[in-house]
Image 1: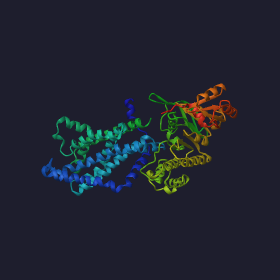
Image 2 (image 1 turned 30 degrees about the horizontal axis):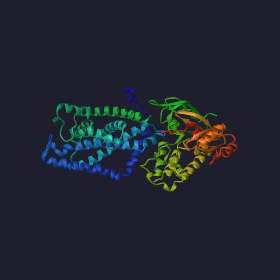
Image 3 (image 1 turned 30 degrees about the vertical axis):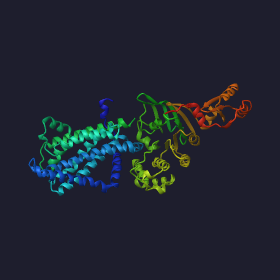
Image 4 (image 1 turned 60 degrees about the vertical axis):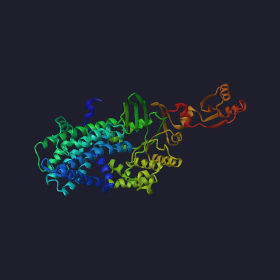
Length: 263
Length: 302
């Protein structure tokens, strides 16, 4: 397949909303259970790392350690919720449940199915980021009103990670293969994106890899600017980086999925 | 009259494998049209091209005069599809499955509800309305898929092996429903490898093998043309074959039985019994299965 075939503009109508709604309705069936992990997970991290390790670290970059990691916890959850929704969960719907096949025999097309999945992954990102924002604000670790901007921002982060995830979903032969991107991409990002210690302590080459290739680095940077209420002009660059990557990868992932599924 | 579905030179190639090889067919309004053939004959591929979920390699395919590749949404609006593999939504109940599908078709919620109720009655699943999919038997799942295929009140119903794996009761129930839909004026396109199903339901059919259509016609006509009205069956023994050859009868070997094709079955049967002293000689009605086996051979396909 020629390169331009991977970047064909998708054919998407308002019907994409119906795919999103299908996933939302499944989510709503077990809504109470769905809220437990994003609520308790950050509390565990805050207690264990923020306050536990924080006893020794005390301050990082001039702020108390829990304040330093609070935006990282929010960003990590944006990443995880979108990434795991559009890898494992989408794969189950695509491969085991044949949900996509059922939808495309109606007037919807594959472009809409995939974009609907990506929008749903982004929505999960908004939901989880909002819950964690609530938790960290109970501990008074974030500044308002700036932090409210995290909610719309989590959509953009979710979109990026959903699109990345969907690219992997389009190429893995079996569900077990998701261990590779999880181990080689998500775990390094979790550690080396300025999450639990600042980026500048890393060797320069790793810093530049982190800055060019890791969406989480940009997500943490922007989120931290918002939670601390210290917004620098470079935030705009990170935002532009996100928008470009999100758009390109969304288009790529839809084309990759069509290559896999439309035969 | 313009055919509802018409294919000319339809071809589908997967990498180096020719799944559908330059086939032509015209399906008329309100008829039941069957695609028969062994596994791998190209039936399902043809169905998937009609459903606009698999792009053809070459040739043309029109549904109600609309080009399937140029206007897939318009074509899909006209179709109801029962796929070979069950793909009901396991995250939802029986009723919710129908409602979600109604929404994909853009049917307003109230209208969808009343159609879903009616369809559940039609396929006799009213009491399973709020049951989750995994609790249904395979026959019930099939019936629900049929109901789901009808939610948009399709003009054309595509059934890809609708009764494979079902017990006789469930199969007869599905047949009954298909026949009642046909009476209401729905055009039915069916693939199957049950010959009984094809002869019961189809007005006309084609037999496919290795991607090509090898014969077309109506079930009775095909039996008459290729086999005749009756068949003699005898045990496959050396004496049998000598006797057949002496009498210059046309025959075919099917494992441990031999089928003899003749216009005068009674005469030949008595010859076999009296002159050649063979026992277990049976005269029976020829069926579509005989046509199928004669034309597609006896080699196992997959």
